[in-house]
Length: 318
Image (cartoon, rainbow, N blue to C red; front, side):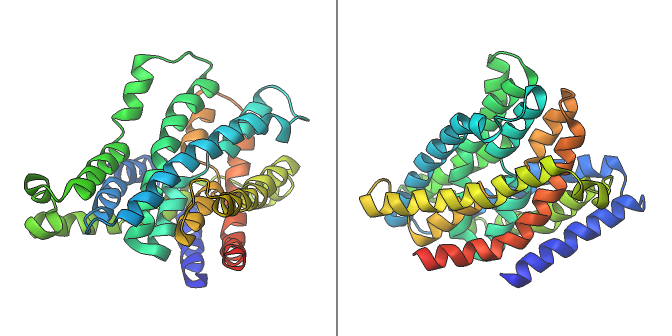
């Protein structure tokens, strides 16, 4: 775990330094993001399902899907109270930053490095409802517009969602001869191998991108921002700790129970730092861009430091 967090930190700092020195330009961030979102993570999510079907993993995955919906709805409701002292755009942005963490750029690479394909199955299933809320509720709140067919179309045609759904169908239905042929790890190894290479780009590119996005910020100024400290404490410490307590309680009473790995994955996803999509929304709709960037920087650094502690706490509670 320490080695993974250290590697993450090194690549984030490297990306930041490359951005600060101008070696990687702003256009590079868009290119890296496009590769990660449309190629690497879809391959990673799809490949995770190229394994023999296990009923217990499917059951845990289904329960994770339900918990993902419940937890996001809870945050939508209580985030008003978490930031009651703030008003207007600042309150709105802080709420969105708390509800939606960086599952794509930060969470998935960490889970891949720590827990392999089973962890990726769980986080891919978790991200279905997460992305639905992010591209619908998150977009509508940040833009101030109403729901439309175009918005919903963007949600369901997202490459990561499509790859997850297709992979899941193959995984669940592979007892059928025709569907089993789509297990490309067995039937089309010449196609599966390049998809593995592309999936392997996820972690290094995502961490470099995270650093590049932070390259324009002054660490000294971020440390002086009290709002960022308050947000980071809630998002990185309070939210995941409350999550693990709720999940453990759910296990005790038999409410959509999860395995130890399932609890760990969901908790880590709820404690990820700022989502890059919310940063993009804040910039596009001119809503507290500076505060959003500060929160992104500080929460990312705090997450790297607190994540090993969080995993240790989960192990104690099991």
